[in-house]
Structures are given as C-alpha cells and as structure tokens.
Length: 489
Image (tube, rainbow, N blue to C red):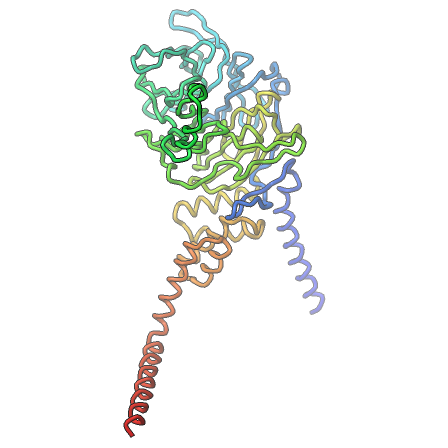
C-alpha cells in the first residue's frame, strides 16, 4: 500500500514539475526580459507569448542581401512580401522564411514597355483581387500590378484643389474591400490620401487631432511672457502625420503615429467615416513609463512606427526606440511584450521598420541589420489567445479553464484574474468572483459580484431577516412600553 502511495505521489510530482518546466520554457529561450504591467502601471515578470525563432537575411536565402527593408506583408496564402527598399525590389518568401518564391523588380505596361521600382517603401497584397500595391516612393507613384508584373494602374500626384502644392511621396499603401486605395504620404499631416478604385483622388482620411490646447490657461500664461520674436519661431498647432497603418478583415483602418511629443491619437481605429473608435479609451500604448538605458544614460519614450492587426483581431505595435513589440487584444488589453535592442536573435537595431503577422507567427524587419526576424507563438501564448478569444466572444464560462491554466503558469497575469472573475460571476459564484476581482484590482466587477452576493443572501435568508426585524421591533416596543409604565407609576 505504501509503495503504491509513493508511486502515485511520484507521478503527481513529476506531472507538476513537467507543467512547471513547460511554463518556464518561454523564460529559458528569451534573449530579453519578459514582463507585463500590473493595474498600478508597474512592470512585473511574465511569461513569453512569442519566442524569436530565427533571423534571416537575403544572403541566407540565396539572393543578394537585403538593403534597408522597410515594409512587410503576409498574404492570405502565407506568402511573405518584403519591400526591399535599397535594392528596388519586392521579395516574396514562404511563411517559414526558408525559401524565395519570387522577386519583383521589373513591371510591364500594356504596350510592352518596362518600368522599374525606385526605393519602394510600402507593400500591400489584395488576395481577393489578385493585385499588388506598391508605394514606389522615389518614383512618386503608387504602382498597382497583377502577379505577372503587368501594370494595372499608376497613381501619381493628384490634380486637385484640395491637394496641397507639395510633392507626392507615398510611403505606405493599403486597399479596402471596395477597392479604395489609401496612402501615407511624406510631409502631409492632413491624414492618409484616399483614392477610389479607379485611382481618382477623393480626399484625406483619418487626420490626427491637434495635441496641444492653445486656449488652455498654461498656454495663455506662456504667451504672456513670450516675445514676438520667439512666437514667430514657434511651431503652429498642427497635428502629427500618420506614420503607418493597417486594415483588418472587417474594413477598420488602424493607424499609428511616431512622435515623441504627441500624446493623443498614437493608435487609432477608424470606421468608414474616419471616426476614431479608440478615442475614449484610457490606454497607454507601449511602455507606460520611459525606459532607462544605463549604457547611454538616457530615458527612451515609446515611438510606435508600425502597426499590424492579426486575423484574430489582436493589435501588434512596433516601438522604434526600444525595438519592442506590444501585443494587445481587440479591447486594447496588453497581452505580451517581446523584443529589445540587441545583436542576438530577437533583438533589433535602432532602425526596426515593420511588423506583420500570419497565423501563430510574427515577422519584423530591421532596416539596419537588413534582416527579417521570425517569432513563433509559445504554448503559453496559445492558451492566452484561446482564453481571450472565448472571453471576447462572450463565452465566459468556456474561457474559465484556459484562464486557470494561464494563472498556473503566470500568477502575475492580471487579465486572467479578471477573466476568472467574470466567468464566476456568470456562474453566480459571487464569493469566488469577488475574490478574483479583488486580485485583479477591479472595483467594477467586485461591486457587481458583491451586489449579486447581497441579493442572493437576502433572498435565501428573507424569512429569518424578517423574523429578526419583527422580534427586534417587538423587543424595542416592549422596552418603550415598560419604560413608560415605570414613569407613570
């Protein structure tokens, strides 16, 4: 009997250790500190949702080295397209980044004449329309072609009264389901330029708001003590330009703005009318507090220079200053932080340029290292994504077990406590919901759970409570009558 007990005990211990080491696998292979933020904005250790698997260059792929790659796009079939800016070409790779599918550098007009790219900085693929959209920057055009390199259309500087008298310098390009084309332009702060399916200029879309408040008391006081000469040198109150964008499967356009001074509209989710759905969300994208670099004795502030929306609705933000990737769910809850500035795989230079996702993988281009780095989802990341997907779809009880699994691997994961609290609340386990809401430091769900517990308590003990009230009133009434009787006598 004792031997059987020892045997089963050993099995349980081995299972626990296996589970524990599985959870720690993410730590063992991470070339950077893996962390997240608690409800107070403090960085806490966390598990890795993704691990950098490898980094490839043009040379390792059997072609000439990449030269300042500045954009990357994953087509629906998994083909990865890289805007190899310095080499004036678009390189197509398979999803595992181990073979070259095609190189696009020469395109053909209907009359048979040729045209070549010059510093292409943006690439977008429409799998539905079988079209390639290229922001051909130095040629001052948006080039649209099929996969056989036949030019379908060229979009050049609009001849319109509402277009400013400046150069046409497309940096990034996307297209929606209706065939409309959007371009981020250099030196334009009015938003993204919008063209219809025929290439006709429609106007500007999604301009950022002005960050400063010129009529505030602070600015009023500053103006009182500013000389006319200084006022003339001061910048006008104009919004920062959109840096990059992406479009999701539902047609919402997400934009990012790379700015060290801008505080509003860093990340936007725009509907068809150009309204920012994230405008009222109290979210800080990127690091909550500036990151201190002891080697250079300087604090780095987050500067988001690219954004990607995964097929599951998660948002990936790329930070130029730290080389970090911040992954959020569709409700802007921070899920994972990965990447850093370093030489090893998973680290980047100070010219990290673009991010893209496909299935359980993330891809990042580095314009200085001339590489593409490939991150793969970890088992922990897969569990989090499963729980988040169920939770955001309203299947709170079904998400309960995945949330428990997340907490077994990472006791600091605040969103999991919140998810468990909501699931228990739906199951009418109000005491459990209160406990996990307290751990999540969510006063909202704690109050909801407390309200449910109170109502349940009153319902179950209604007869006793009424009896106690009646008895109490009777006793008080008896004491008052007795006191009055004594006073009379």
